[in-house]
Length: 388
Ligand code: GLA
Image 1 (tube, rainbow, N blue to C red):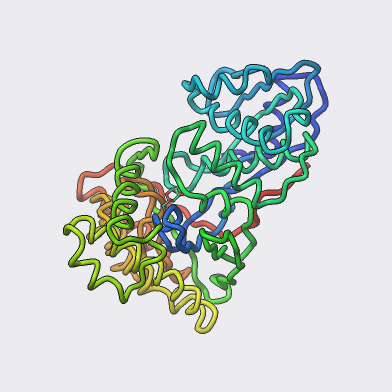
Image 2: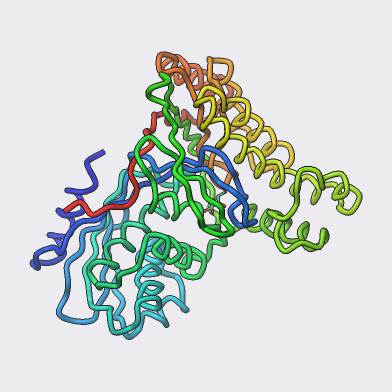
């Protein structure tokens, strides 16, 4: 796939003769551990990946916001005067991501700041793989408009804007992990995020120095977080917190689980147990990385997968097979990553086992009669930035 930064600039030149103001880009992310904990005000540990989405922007003389991307045929435009109504009406399809960001950023920066713009978007983040192609769009466009509209917002504020776009313009009831990972990523590090305070700490991963790599196994099973299971899991978590008399599941400790078992029906209890133990696993992973390095986190990763498979029930057979096969092929740990119900698994492997593991997974999928997965490695990379 071509480099998204020149691709976005080239796409912009098909839209306008105006010189670009610049090109901004933001990465997708892999969540190392901490799944469905973000909207429970818990802990997460994602890292930004090398796959990026770029947004090239030129100013216009009128008040249109026009967006075009390499994954859609036609540009979509909305006037700033009509933006609130257009978001309210919905039906914008992919354009809800960039237009939702324009809408939310204008609300945060003040209506006077906004000007008509052409935005061209190009990406090499796989869509629907659970690698946050949506946050990559949101964070690149938010970074671009923050500069072009001179809004002066910081990275955390821009992550919040991405989440508002996702929740209110796209209609997916997600947490803030993906946008924070995309805005704040650092090379060779993960972002430890407390989703209550939004405090972050960069945690060195040291995969390269330890001779390790992350293999992504995209099952190509598609998911959508605006519907179905994601929303139901969120509702179960809220119901569990209410039944336990706490505002969020963040406020339940592992030691409280015995009491929770008596108060909750079996299914709600298992949903709660996933969140509570997952928060603890994130804390334990951060501690293990800091004290013993990346070879020490394997069991935590795999325990997270088991919890998602059995308690939270968001895995699918393809993800389970990917995890089992990677472990049998020498992975130190493996788990599905992202919202679940499809998408990708990750495996932490010695670099010299990557090829064997990828072919073992391909073979296992063929034997099971599943669509051949996409496998590729990812590198913990820098977050959103201006490229040109
Ligand atoms: C999706 C959402 C995130 C988070 C994960 C699950 O990626 O966008 O906010 O909830 O699922 O951890």
